[in-house]
Image (cartoon, rainbow, N blue to C red; front, top):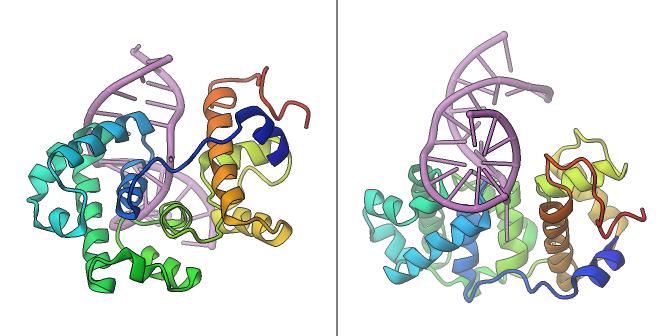
Length: 205
DNA sequence: CACCAGGCAAGTA
DNA sequence: TACTTGCATGGT
């Protein structure tokens, strides 16, 4: 699968963000939301110089909410950004480079304890912000894997992740690319309302 | 108009 | 434990 997708897409260069904290913000804002709408919200945050844990905490929730309005669920997400910001400051005084030194499973537990951070958001942060070797599962991943008969369509998050972790020894760059490939494939060829996947790069499987 | 988008938490049985 | 529902904007 990886080979076919790499032949088709080349290097997708995920995650498009300058800093680790920007990755974290994007991971929260993109929950069940099109990335297009997240880009608008992040641009607003940059314009208002809010891309830092301390600034997010200081900003009034109603104003933060207005800035990220385009990303949807903005009242909930503004609270989630504040929660993860407080966590980062409490944990490492806002220094993500210091936080990065901790082990992946340790970091994951801490992230999951933050309100608004579930398994996909936590793993996205581990892989794309902290460069930990973690396979990120999402709705697209589950759809593609189950349509190809690799797992049941009712498989849970941890089981699907374990399936990959236990059977393949993938490094960080490959895990980064693979998740991006799966998302792009699903967006272009395997959306819910598309029955046939005509030119899907995985057609031969 | 209906449906979908790089989920999560809280409530219910 | 295994569902269900609220959260909300913007594109197709």
